[in-house]
Length: 64
Image (tube, rainbow, N blue to C red):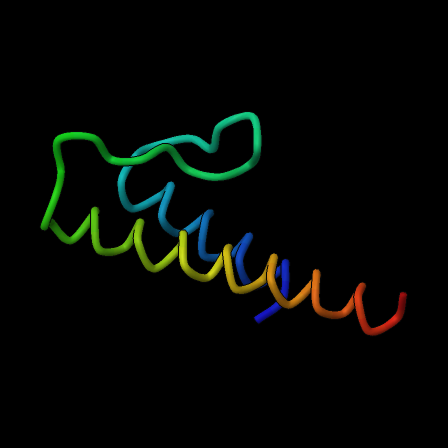
């Protein structure tokens, strides 16, 4: 997954659930929506974001 892929997923999520990204460019946690499709979609986005950050950190370490 690339940063562009994640950005596209965030745009889709925003369009689907009518939210806007926060200052960090990520969508806010769907408080009060636990165990709903929106919550599960948010978890998928969050995990994808974490994996992308870890991959970037690993790449920096290898190049370091």
